[in-house]
Length: 352
Ligand code: TXA
Ligand code: MG
Image 1 (cartoon, rainbow, N blue to C red):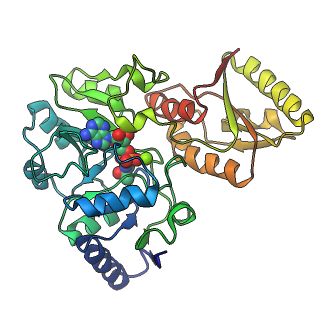
Image 2 (image 1 turned 45 degrees about the vertical axis):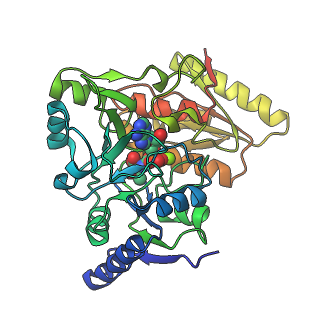
Image 3 (image 1 turned 180 degrees about the vertical axis):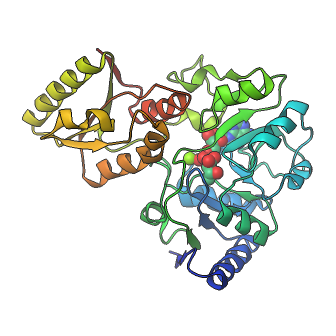
């Protein structure tokens, strides 16, 4: 059991500087620091130190064949970590770094296989969150960081979520408040002729296509992985983001969806099960009387992305046994939201 230091950021420049200095020292000496990014909280360790990567896997309870993302503070830090940067990848970096985009390159020899889950490729990202950026600069090394949750729990969008999962297992948490986006970065494989989305995120397929003309999507992104359909991002094969409740997505004509969710919820309650509903702000009034969570507005589905993991964690805290959810496919962010939600539901979608 470690004594996890928790530091609130944004109180005064002096205190921030002191907390960042301490975080940098912990990282350089092989320890683990959780920190805010614009997507979700990350659990950082020195990416070039195999022992630090092993500690990350142990703290999360994560299988060590699941590679970590290396976080950098400036584009100049990329070339030593990779073999080759295709022209189109340079364009993507110019347009979207710093920001919620991770790129997969062939790795150089200085990146240990302990960090890349045994692969010859490395995932690299330059986050835009000022605390993340300043912390990586203080550390002076690339920072390997998966999401700062226990394996199998939703990614943390607040420092409290990190504390719930990892208190006593890591050295320090930098508390920068609630994150902005709420879903993990878009992962693009840039080792081939055209970029391939391995994990959808806030930067959409359309964003990439508008910039460089072509963008493919790994077929395993929206379907249930199987023997014939292995996701190229190893982490995507796990039933990530799994809430304790049995979650079912109900999809189809909006009025019919409301009627079916109401009916199923009544049946489930009659069977003595704690039952909740996850729905858009616009339809929440139609479920009054039930344990309903408004996830955000269909008119601005960034709000839905922002609240998804928090809502799933709240259902866990409330010990919900069954949850029925509406579907949120609309818009460019729909792919990222539904990728996470269908995984949380164990691919259980009821079409009505
Ligand atoms: O937004 C994010 O990306 C957050 C914040 C903390 O930066 N990080 C994050 O890391 O989501 P993690 O470890 O929870 O998810 C990383 C995903 C996993 O699915 C992993 O399999 C994939 O990236 N990945 C990492 N390196 C890879 C590689 N070389 N090839 C293919 N997939 C890779
Ligand atoms: Mg994760």
